[in-house]
Length: 324
Image (cartoon, rainbow, N blue to C red; front, side):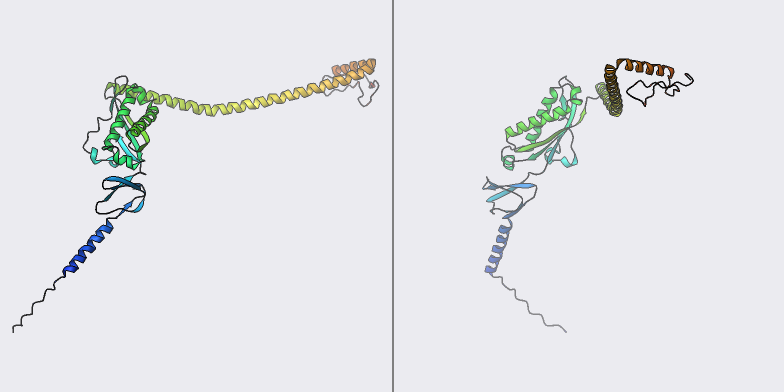
């Protein structure tokens, strides 16, 4: 049995007003969404109105006039950015310099007409996003050109040995100062954080071998200096302690001798006072004491001429049996 054909469904016509309302709603949503933008904690945003600078806003959710009337550009002002010279790291890869032969940018001529390969880095922060955006067109190229010019001048004023050894720190400090001055004159709105020399390599060949020998000699010199300082720090405190010990012993001996001399003086004065009162008796007593010390040279003498328990007269001990 054939089933009767189903009646065709009627297509409902969409009201033109509904279409208009949908379009209006979509446009409004797009306008609202394009009116907001987010600024990261490490950024500041420069807002342009009709292509002219209007304001700078900080981190957070910010608003702008849609329909292209206002445009925002986020600038990383709290991030330390790094430029490398003579080599590239993965974190430093940039589309602007991705196809550039950077091996020659570190080759320089020193003051004594030697070619040297100096690799270095420049770290900087953007302090003024407005200056960074508008004062210079090719910002990164300008930074690199200025950095290379300053470093070439400093290296060109010094002999190769000084560049490789004693003047590295001075080159870094002066390069940072000179770069900052030029950046400020250009109005780049950046602050140099540090300039750090990396590898410094002399020309390949006999010259390089000679400089490696010089570097080895310098390293040996520094090692010997450090060993000498260690021995100094080990021996000198011990010697100072021994010296202080001897000084204290000498001071103690001096005090002992002074006290003994003071006692001898006091004893002499007391004898002199007695002598002034009874010269004959005192002279006789002193004579007998001297004889006693001669007869008994040791401290364990057995002959006693003076009876020290008596006083105020000549205390001669009775000798029994003569001297022993």
